[in-house]
Amino acid sequence: MVDYDVIIVGGGAAGLTSAIYTVRAGLSTLLVEKELFGGQIALTEGIENYPGFESIQGKDLVDKILAQAKKQGVKTKVGNVQSITTKGKEKIVEIDNEKVSTRAIVLAVGSTPRKLDVVGREEFDGKGVHYCVMCDGPLYKDRVCAIIGGGDAAIKESLSLAKIAKKVFVIHRREGLRAEKRWQDLALATKNIEFIWNSEVRGFFGEKFLDSIKIFNSKTNKESVLELSAVFTYIGHVPNTKSFDFKKDARGYFVVDKSYQTSEEGVFAAGDCVAGNHTQIATSVGAGAAAGMSVINYLHLKE
Image (cartoon, rainbow, N blue to C red; front, side, top):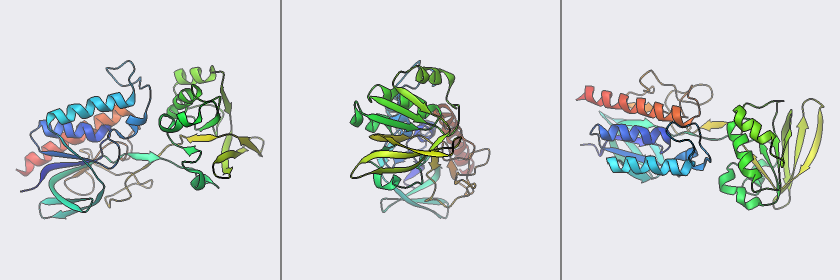
């Protein structure tokens, strides 16, 4: 007898959705999350493109989905998955040195914010260099800050930060944004947001805490120094797949077949850790549902 029919690793949109599907099919389901249930969603403000909600805070959406999963019977556990091995027809998942057996696995481990590989970044992580305005923005009330990036996340967070900080610089390596036009228009019309185009950050400087950054302008080929208190980086994500040995693409994302199964039979993957997935809540929910249904079909065929 296995401990659970299904173990889902990762408590973000994809993992939560997979869990709801598998438990409703009568499969005992354990959902394991390393840190924060909801993942990146829980740190997102003002979600306005998720069907059914004109506008909802990320944490509120997570609370609703998590409550639904628990009500359906999903068991949850906070812990770090250290390894996955196969023993006959069973999969053994090691969680904080505890071995738990299962018949199938869904990896929904998501991704983490990409970090700049420049001078001073590591030294000032948490001391002026941050990745979440909702988490750390309030520390910089009435101070000068910067956002790095030009996508939806960067521009939406610049608007949130502008309500707290005295001044917000948005530094983007191109002349033009990738964000939705609505967010662009709002940011461009916000008086205390200033855009620095065709530029990239080359270094972070300060004593105990960040107090300035070096910027290189690709059009003028000149460097300049900008004095500020904090920088929030939104330049994409890196998949959290390093601990797993299943087939990946060149960027480290899991490669799956049309049923969301990885290179290992009985191990499925969904969400932002999968090659080709758009980093959107709705697409992760859809992928989670599809992976959950594939697990159900897989286990039924094994009976």
